[in-house]
Structures are given as structure tokens and as C-alpha cells.
Image (cartoon, rainbow, N blue to C red; front, side):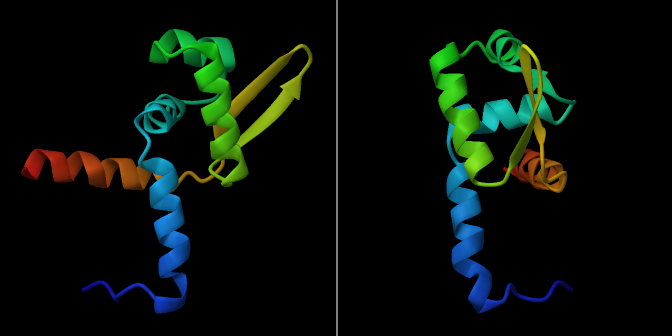
Length: 98
């Protein structure tokens, strides 16, 4: 049996969930579970416009969910926290049970 989350961490966990609750950000994360990508690749795979992708990537990076590496002239984005994939699997399981 899992122990309840510590009260002192509830607000932090809620912040993470708020960041992930955006469909565009969740779509990008879902693509990045398979490996790092450049912005152009994320635009192609997600069907989202470049300006929206860039904005959402910045939000995810500022919230410590993504990392980036620069290899001139390209910038590659990847998941910083691999445990996000566990959360996606949990969501997938929840959907099957609905």
C-alpha cells in the first residue's frame, strides 16, 4: 500500500500537474518520451505551430521538466525527468479503466 503524499509537498505536486495539464505541453512530452528532438521535428510531429511549440518548450524547461542542449546551429530538447513517462503510463492505464 502506498503512503499518502506529504502535506508539505502537495503544492509542489499540484504545480507540476498544472504544467502537464495543458494539451499542447502534454503532446510535446508524449513525443519526447521516445527521445530528444529539435523544435522543427516537434512541430512536424505534433502538428503545432512553431511559435506555440517554442512557448510551451520554454514553459516546460522553466518548470524543470525538459532539458536542452545546443549543438550549433541546432537546439535539442529532451525530458529531464524520466519519471514523467511513469505518469504518462498511469494516465494511459486510467483511460483504459474509464
